[in-house]
Length: 249
Ligand code: KIV
Ligand code: NA
Image 1 (cartoon, rainbow, N blue to C red):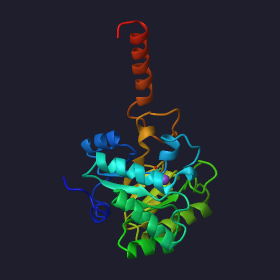
Image 2 (image 1 turned 45 degrees about the vertical axis):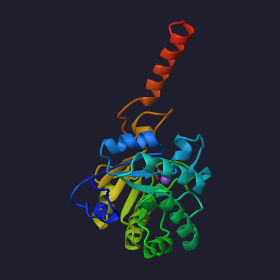
Image 3 (image 1 turned 180 degrees about the vertical axis):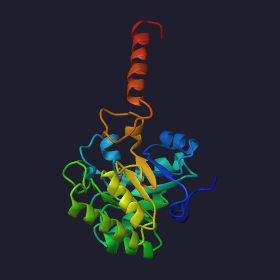
């Protein structure tokens, strides 16, 4: 199967649902390509789930390029979205330089948080495919609580999603909002919505791979688990320790 483009993903609206997972490393990217996940996000969540930071704000453009390269080498035939990390997309020219670095590292498109409409329009005008992101936006939020519960905040998120799509984004990620708002945004915009904790009414879903695979200490309550890799490693390593210390290996 051919690698998805921004256009082919955009055209899936109301035709087929879009499964997305994050990926940060070559072996995981390889496995996800084998499983036919059509689109991978190298998210700045890498800082929290793979680097031990307590927020995504410590992640640099160099970190992101390193991980985008690793994922590209593992998944050469899969559409890869690279996340623009904190403060690398504050104005159109800075954002363009940052986006080009991610593309050079192997990304097909880039994602950025919030209604940075001038930035989105500039990147799109320069030929860069852009994914938007609203709802909970971890680079600027102080906690990870659900947003959009109150009517004014829900309206703001709906307006932001419309504006982000209007500025030229080909997908919009909706993070940690009520399911009814996820559905309302999905009906309101012409490009696919990709939800994470935004209900099953979105056009697609994205999960942080470490959360989905149970690799880590904790994960958000909305994240389904499909494996328990953390425990599998504990069990396997304990078996190994037992064999070496017991003299059987
Ligand atoms: O960085 C990331 O993994 C993300 C997803 C949570 C959407 O932005
Ligand atoms: Na992110």
